[in-house]
Length: 126
Image (tube, rainbow, N blue to C red; front, side):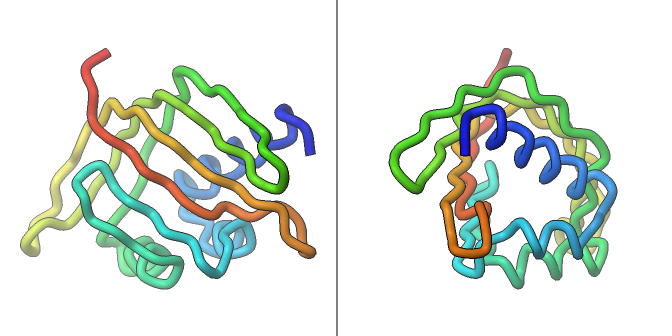
């Protein structure tokens, strides 16, 4: 896989997040995925998909501002900056969050193709 192919996978992942396409996300995610939100909350594949399925999390918009891909063997790192609009449930209450983030996404090659392995992000001011 080349850098453009990894960026295409990222585009598919973001499209699936904003359309709440759980089937597409499940197919893209590695079984050992770890998703560390900018809040510090950590999800695995099952808990992340359940948050979307239940409506506790609903991605409304994802705008990629910058993405840089580094390929290292069977791992691709995507260093990025993005703006995300998301509705989340906090203490039983729906809250809209407008997030400006720096992030690190990791993809890995598997016999079934490239799978999304990890995400870590932190809030920033652009």
